[in-house]
Each structure stands twice: as C-alpha cells, then as structure tokens.
Length: 189
Image 1 (cartoon, one colour):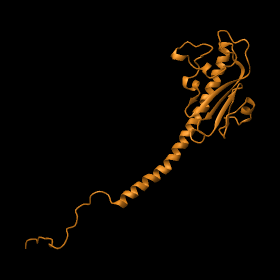
Image 2 (cartoon, one colour):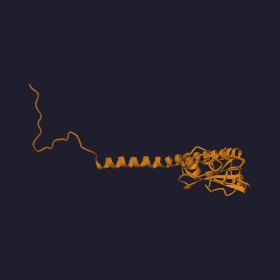
Image 3 (cartoon, rainbow, N blue to C red):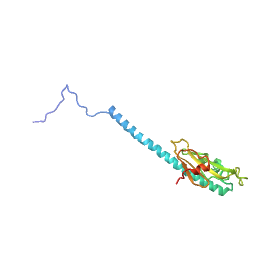
Image 4 (cartoon, rainbow, N blue to C red):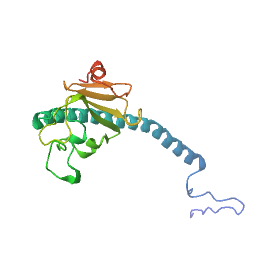
C-alpha cells in the first residue's frame, strides 16, 4: 500500500513556516537590557576617568615641582615667577632662556590640561635684581596648585606642592591659598 498524502483542508489555515522580525515585547526586552548595561557602565567609566585625571594631575604637579628646582639651579633667578617661565618659547623654538625655560610642555604651561587647572605662584619678595638675562625676577619660594576644572566630573581632589617638594592633596577640591595651607593638608604617598 502506497503512503497516503496529507493535504490540508480548504477551511483550515496553514501554519507559518517562520516568523519575520521581532515582536514588540522582544524589542522592549532588548532595549531594557541595553539600558541596564549602560546604567552600570557609565558611572564606572566616569570614576575611571576621574581617577586617571587625578593621577595625571598629581604627576604634573611633581613635574612642575622638579622643573622649578631645575630652573632655580640653572638660571640664578630663584624659583620661576609663573608657569609660562617653565614652558617652551612661543613659536616652537628650542632655545631655552630664563623667561621660557622649556622644562614643561606648552599645554601645562598654559594652565589647563586633562580636566585640571594648574598654577605656579611665586611666594615672598621677588629677587632683586632679576637673574642675568631674565626679564622677570624669580622668587625665594613658590606654590604649585592643581584643581579640577569641574569638581565631581573631571576630578575630586586638588593637589599642591611647594619648595620642600612634598605633594599634598585636598579631598574638597579647593585650591590651597598659601604654602602653610598646602603643608597642613595630607601628603600624597
């Protein structure tokens, strides 16, 4: 006996062989999962970025401190009067002078890099007279500060250093106004 063929009845709908696309529920579930992943990842990314900015700021404060000591021993003008005195000459020249010592990069010398603002302030009376071939007199002491440009977004802590060369931090992000205030802060190990 030959096998019997099965035919559908004219009144019964045929089953769909495959469905096309996603249903609305499936699409909503995928979107919800993506939103959960983003909600977890973005705060972690922000914390990692702030930590990287803080580490870079502490490193730049150390670099500026070292450059200030080099400036002092090289130019017989005391410590530098400003950050610009530590930076490269305008126009990209390589000739270092007392006024543009070429000891730090031009972006840090301009005062803002990586979400932090940097400043170098001469402390005490300026040298009198200024060192040989120096347009601006240096100082007997200095204060280097780094503070977040947007507290809580680019960084949490501010940093400072002065003539002894130790690095200090402030968890409030405030800028130290004096060497005494800087030295009263906890030292960064």
